[in-house]
Length: 203
Image (cartoon, rainbow, N blue to C red; front, side, top):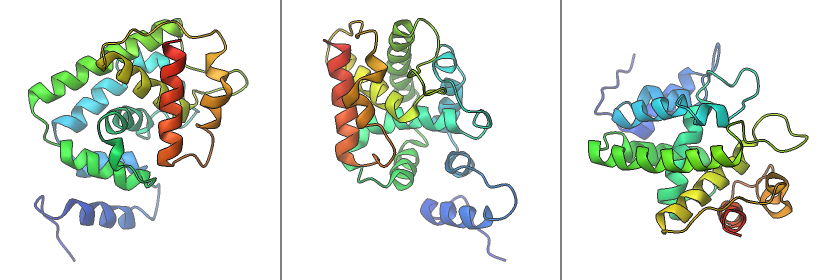
């Protein structure tokens, strides 16, 4: 038997937890993160994930409600907004690193994150009429597309810009959708969807 304390290397703990997780009902990467990177930041992720209007903005597939998907979307918002210069396409490792660095964030840092998240979500929710962010013919919320929109909106707000109402068919915009499809977990695609979202939100 090998015992790991809370002083053990977090990367080692994540890898070991994933190996133990290979049998039975597997946990999602975000559920593993929640078990390993405990602290005020993790608590905030869950709080924001189930807060309104974010909960109404994100329509998930059946079975995704309780597997950490909502929390991971909030995590991606902060990670891509603040640290995407370090993103190299390896999503799990990137999110693990960001969560480890912020696990014990100070109250003032968490307050600033909460404030920005609330402003962004409130504005995008208003654009969506208080309902979910959807794309015609898609069904659930296209999460990759939404992450680009939320980060783009955050950049407009933090730069002092004003978010305007986008065209009525904006969620089907060819450039935005193209940069959000499967196989687009690259730095270039991430930047493309964020930049296109900014263009649509400030046209």
